[in-house]
Length: 110
Length: 110
Image 1: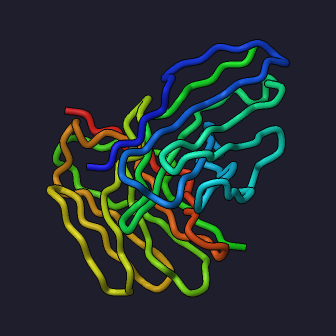
Image 2: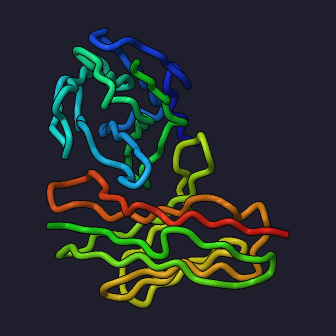
């Protein structure tokens, strides 16, 4: 079974902090994704990566950046956290089958 | 613009009361329609992929069907453990990233 692991289930950060969300997959998948999920808005794509050191903007990239230095690891970075970035963040990976998700990181920015 | 619309937003059923969830999509050149189940506080879990009109997939009390414009998730004789949010998604024009509907939250009471 594909395993996508997000390093933190819950995070509380202060406005203006730099925040790192980490995601690791164990199936050698080429493609990895970051979504955020908010009530009434559903899942929205922030960034994705189809190879090491490659990245593409999704629908809502503003305020975020990403890093993919190794194939198995995809990091989401909030350069200066703001309260409107309080959300559930979901990482996913894709190989030859369906998209597989981690269990999410619930981030609260105060 | 590619879109996925799910209805109803919420559905309450009695145990054993069968019903259907709807997912309509507007995307040219459909490259698969995906159904996921999401439990509170967890990441979405893959259920089915459908590729062509007329295709059906089944798993326990769930059956997914696909037409040229929409998909249905039929739930037969549901049990309380079927309570969850059900998401459908299609690949966008840009490539591999999935576009998700906002989901249907199903509550089954005994």
